[in-house]
Length: 406
Image 1 (spheres, rainbow, N blue to C red):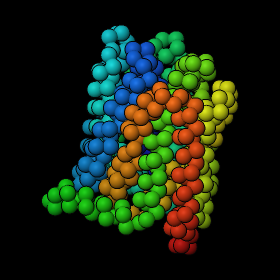
Image 2: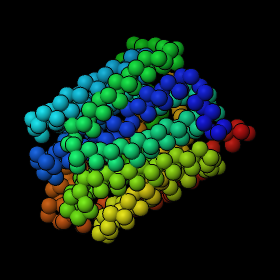
Image 3: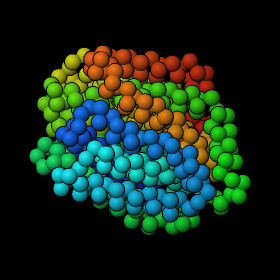
Image 4: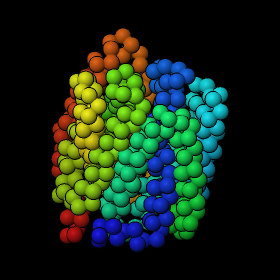
């Protein structure tokens, strides 16, 4: 139980509760939105609506990183949560009333993505401020476990709700989760979630400082570049997975269970990283993320739902092991007053190619077929992950606590 002792830290505990409250709804909403779009549009519209969420997230992420380093993170994060609660609440009303149109779903996802761009860069710095340095990996592991639990329950519940009651209820739960998150963040003292005083150097100067920190470490920007390309190919799973579920796997409820198995794998990965302390964390992280494309390859092989679910479990486990080791290494290597800006470049880069995939996958699959796109995407992701072993710093990076004698 000592691995859960980080929850005794009051400030981290409030953050953790707020995050957990919003997570299950946040995993329910995408499933619900995808099937809502399929009901009133087609696969091309799915890519459009999902891209509408991702594009503003990318466009405003760097601005969000500067704001998170220069303004009180408490106010920034609460504001973002309230915007997302209102937007998802309106979306739920439109879906429940039966009057939703594709353009309305896309517009509300633009608002959601913009608010998330303000919220996301602050997370990494906040965790660092709410726990002692020696407990960073435990805190990140518990965040991963909470996300994993949500990714198990969320898609399964969403699939059942979509099948038997409609997608609006899943989105309503998401809206309520953001409201709870805002309340819990409000319980944090300003001294914990506050950032450095506002800089008069100007936003461009702040962005240049963050960029210098980002490119100064080759292992940082190479991993982010590869992650961006992998996320582009992952769009094949996001767009074509639900279509395959409708066509041959058994529909929304089955797809929800497949995604829940991915969440179960992520939970397993979170448990592993509570105890795993590799001497070379980046090498272990890259090895783990080679499992991430497994469910895409399972779909390409035409496996039944059981086989796709098993592959999703393996992929989810590998992704969370990678994320936890990567984020902990980043937090230990970047100065605290620049961490949110570097995190913003990380998120910006990681998501940059995702909208390209969301828009290209429907068009290419219409001509080449689903199987060809799934095969090409899965094999490309495996090759990209393996290429990171060519970076000397990735192979050589050692755990900071080991170097410090911990």
